[in-house]
Image 1: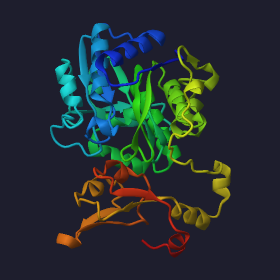
Image 2: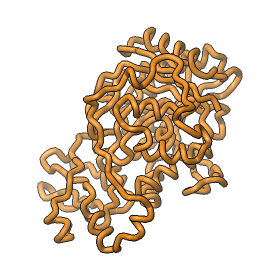
Image 3: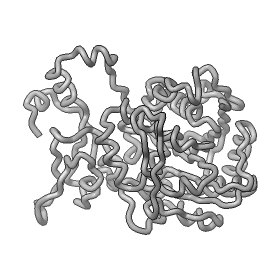
Image 4: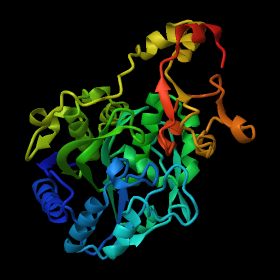
Length: 384
């Protein structure tokens, strides 16, 4: 597998600048062979929001990619994503991505319209995935991630972006089925082995720092990345924002598989390198220190349970909360309920049931949910 990653500068969402940077990156990395093919472009849409919030892949970036793959000979271009709470006939209007696709002559795909089961016989965590049928229609899948932090997985990029191929609320049960960072990472890597994406082009012009992927703050980075090796791209991007790549669960799991890379030293940077671009003050999600599997096994069960209760948990600010119920609908463990009438209406969280997947934090449209440390006294009481 090609191990080249091209990183180039692009300071603003000016259409010609973005297009030129994308073409330069593709020419410097592995060839993007789309001639005569049906191409599926998968941007990142946690939830439909204005592009200036840096939650979604920018529509100017998408337009430039569509222009590029068309000029490279693609016969048909599909574009789509499925947010955690996809409404009927979703067209990504608020983000401008749906209109951008149509304006450029691409086809916007409703990922919930038709589904297909994709086997994953070599999967470590999952042996089958139910995905949008657009995966079957496409000859070539290109991931278009946004460089962002992620409350659960620390960093989200090219490989994690493909989780959106699972339609709408069907993603929530995956967090229940794979509740830890390690098991969830194994599932994401399985998904990539099943789907076999061909390329990734990353929007790192303005990324997100702090409590991403939906509630962080925009951060100007001024870069575009391109590679046919999604793991190599994720190594580069996480390194740029200051994460040791092997501390990222998906990266560590993928490297252990030996499918994309056998060693980080195999990555070839054909233009800029992460070392010369690193951002020392990038606001990251603190890494959680964990012991090895053996030490985890040897710890008494009551101690493990107590430590789980100390895991940072979602907390709702009632002065901001809209009582829209999105968080209760996305909650795969059914730990969140909306009850009461009028001024007394509020969302309650059963922390004994909550698995700390932070999907509610991702999906909240007004940032009413924070992830906070659990006071020792509360953990000792073991109360909600």
